[in-house]
Image 1 (tube, helix red, strand yellow):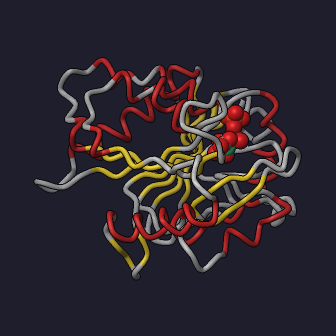
Image 2: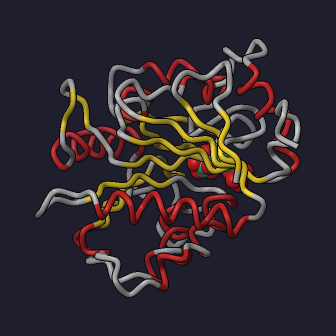
Length: 253
Ligand code: 6PG
């Protein structure tokens, strides 16, 4: 895998993986590395996103087969959730349950799902308060050890879309969003939480993402894309892509 520091991105790195499995290996390394560095009696707090890319990577994490992983030291939170019941095919919780949780020995008490079945504004407030209660704070803002993001072809990430990019700079930890095409209500963490994380990683694969990756990395008038606002001020950002999504980045061939 090649590491590149793109000009438009400060202290961020781009990892171009030859295959999805190599992407999963890299993410697995981020998780096991984080677990190994944990101070005693603490937990590794991860926020996971929905989407087909995260699902494919979660399914193939080599650390799933590593019997030495202290999964009880991991606590799972969600970056966002569709406002549907937890057993709905659209549910991000259901996707993570099937692709990750059912394959690891993690205590139920370590799983903090967003309740998609609840009234959105009430749940958004509840989850925002839960993050403040459950996570360490930095600058009085909840701080994740690792935030795993997907990227839409329109430059959305989490459930913050170009039409409601203002949510990224919300003063609250969680907000109610809506999908631009379907209108489906979503609950999402906001930029203040994303950019307060110790590590943020975008999982991006597929040729259809090549244009948006080029726009974001090369800095071509990308300000209308919510993903361009991801910039962890006291943390690291990794763009973890496959060769297809990275094919338009200069020098990535
Ligand atoms: C969601 C995600 C969303 C997703 C991207 C990428 O709830 O759908 O949080 O941000 O990660 O849309 O999805 P794909 O990997 O399926 O392209």
